[in-house]
Image (cartoon, rainbow, N blue to C red; front, side, top):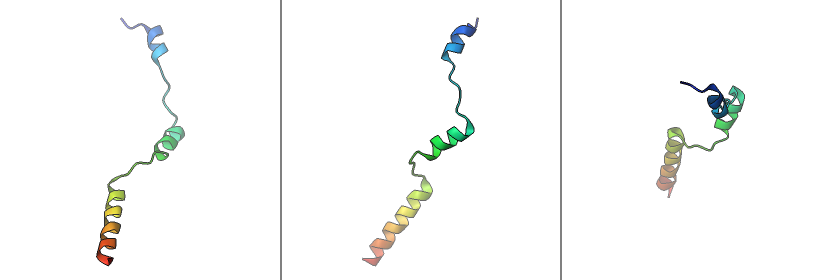
Length: 49
């Protein structure tokens, strides 16, 4: 049987859309596009030298 009082104690409200968006964008995460740009820039430096 579900004990609703216990379940309510465990409840944590989810972030609002704006707060979630801010939390996501504030993380410094590298994606594949960033990696490809870095590789291209490094290869251009190598070719120029």
